[in-house]
Amino acid sequence: MDAGYGLVTTSTPNGIASGEPDLLENGPSKYTYENKRGSHGSFEEFVAKSNPQVSKTVPATNKRADRHYSKRMRRRLVYKNGEVNITQTNIRKRRRRYLADIFTTLVDIKWRYNLLIFTLAFTFSWLIFALVWWLICFSHGDLDETNRKNPNFTPCVVQIKSFTSALLFSIETQHTIGYGARHTTEECPEAITVMMLQSCFGVICQAMMTGIVFAKLSRPKKRAETLMFSKNACICKQDGELCLLFRVGDMRKSHIVEAHVRAVVIKKKVTKEGEVMPLYQFDVNLGFADGRDRLFLVWPVIIVHKIDEDSPFWDMSPDDLHKEQFEFIVILEGIVESTGMTTQARSSYLPGEILWGQRFDRLVTFQKENGQYQIDYSRFHNTIPVETPQCSAKELAELKQHMPDSEFVDEDDNNSFASKRDHYNNSSSYITKRHGAAQTDFQYDDDFDSMDSSLPINEDSETLL
Image 1 (cartoon, rainbow, N blue to C red):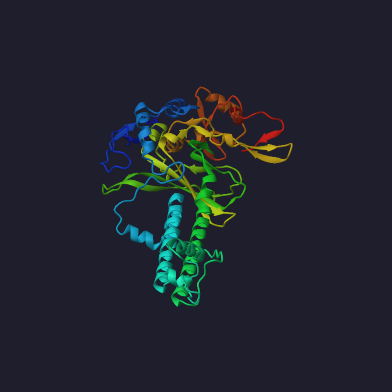
Image 2 (image 1 turned 90 degrees about the horizontal axis):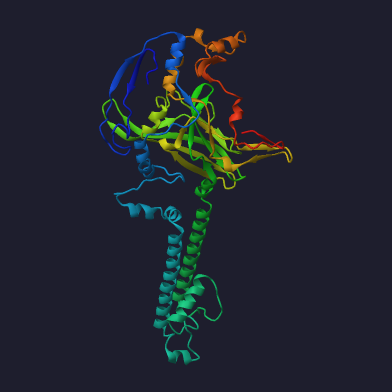
């Protein structure tokens, strides 16, 4: 973009539009630079030529980007539900390592495999111990018809006549059912030893199954399913600077304790030595120094990332945003209030899911009739257009830097403000200086809340957030 001042360096946008390889491919980096020099004229010409145009609508992506958007959707790293699109292969001794941590393996596998494993474990244990009981009775002569008719003969196990009766006795012993017809005697010490072993084995199996079922039911992963992320992220202007916004919310009344959020951008990076890193993680500052990343999640909260010099979105304009290949991943962590375990919820946004010139609709209202705050989750993903410069944050900062302070319209000075505003009334937007911070101002027909046409007018409620 030629802002009409100084020496500006522009580069060919990387991504699909420039024919570069995709995010997951290691290809050569192509960068070309041009130097353009603009001329300084009067202040009116400077504002008219270099001031970025604004629009209330989201800029339409080009057809080529739309054609490849579905392909990029399939290649995202983190899905909307938080699952990771990664497959691990060629791991040495993988089965041995999984069996070494058998409890975690059983907790991680699906329910149907758990039920199948426990059903087979109990069935095989019944059959194996039934065979042992049958061999003990066979070796002692309990299955001999002559010995059973002898009143002076004492069997090892009473009322075992076949393998079926041995199987029934095995089940009764392992689960301490004890119907009373079959029982061991003092005749065979080996039978007493087998009875103790089978009783211990049955208790261990039941304890493992109970623990695994409880661990699977109380996993914090399930708690993360009730944490919501907005379908789209937004870029708009706040306090005179471009900011990226996304919304998080919690459906449950039980709160997430010590909730905090962080974000990263997965994007290709080329080092000074020419090494291509296709999946480099750029950290996104969500207000860690100011404590804005720690949330009190009693109602849906809008997370704000201020696009500054350290931001990966610093030099992205609306056109560059849809030509870039990156993925914006957000992570919400906290402690489940009811269980005390740590949970983590994840989501991601592709370039096509970041809306330029939009902000989130308000959804929290105060009900005057009952004195309660009401959250309308039907508006959770709704956005409304706002006036936003159609340039990158870098270009907007350079525009403010090259404009002298004497040519700002300072709202802090109440004298002759109307005359200064009328002086620059020919342009669609003008630069003001509010409380020492330079920003682009626009001529609205009404106040800011007049754009919230979707909000219902109700005298018994008051819209807050």
